[in-house]
Image 1 (tube, helix red, strand yellow):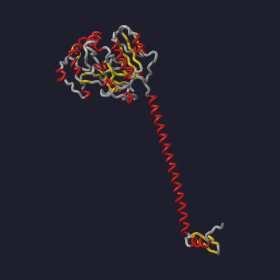
Image 2 (cartoon, one colour; image 1 turned 135 degrees about the vertical axis):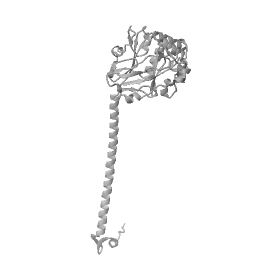
Image 3 (cartoon, rainbow, N blue to C red; image 1 turned 120 degrees about the horizontal axis):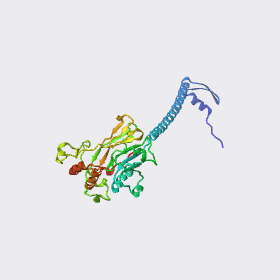
Amino acid sequence: MSHNLPDVTSICLKLRSSIININIDGNSCTLHSIHPITYRLIHISNMQYSDTIFRRISYIIYAIFIVVLIILNVFLTRRILFLNYESSRYSYYMCTQILNESEHYLVDWLDHQFNVLGFKNVCLINVGHPLSMSLRNRFRIAYVEKKNRIQEFHYCLSSCFIDEPMSGKDLLMIQDIDEYLNVRKADVIFDNYHNYEQFHFKEIRYGYVLETDNEIMNHSLRKTNLWRKPHHLLGEYEENDIKDLFKCQVYDKWPSCSEGNGKEMIRVDAIKSLGVHFHESNYNSTRRLYIDIKEIRINHYIMRTKEDAIRSAQKWNKIGSRLGQIKTNKWFRIVFDDTVTESKRLM
């Protein structure tokens, strides 16, 4: 089989007609030289090709650099968050004094502290009859008994949390068992933990709904006592003219329709002394944060029932002022407020 090869002369003529300089000699052709313009075009083409390769390599290096920056940023961000978390790890502790308290009310109160708010431990300083072992075993509580009825909160530091001591970073709160923290914004303490040692909470007082304790058995205060007095910090009207309509007066030197002083928690390593409403810090007193009542507040059930109101007043020698509050109970039942049933967990 023969193959028809192209004629050499015809190929050379085609090349000669181009910008390449070719000599034709018989059946052969010789490349004599490249036209200067052709050389420049080839040179430019090579430069453009090299520039394209360089740009592509630059883009790849730039993309790798950006990816490395992103990975480094993610790593450093996580590291900073981890270090902040480690430096902010703390727990909440509660301490209170009780006197011949109904276990029904104690169970409801303890349930709120542990299962709703997330307190790590609660200490009950008992100055009355001993608590039953069934209640003490039901909740993981610290327990102290003493005979003196004077409120001595140094027991919260010296005798309460022996098995699992508090650390200096932890927060300790002093509170009564007719008071319930109502947390509307869970992270407000966490966000301010490094700027303050003390956090103070304002209270709102609730009135009674039921007359006797038997009526409230097997029911939670958080689901029965859902009416309270108005509070101006919540945008509600509570001036004297409306108080006069409810016959708000001074009984036994106590205004019947006024608010209490609230309660507060303090970082353990800042404690100088503990009080009923305010604590004394080793640091600057300006490092106390008054929490917005819209973010966290105390629901104060000063009259859980009418019967309970009278009995507790007799125990703590407040019968005169409490009778005044009973007479003006309608004042403490103006606003329906069940937000405590949706209280958030402390972070």
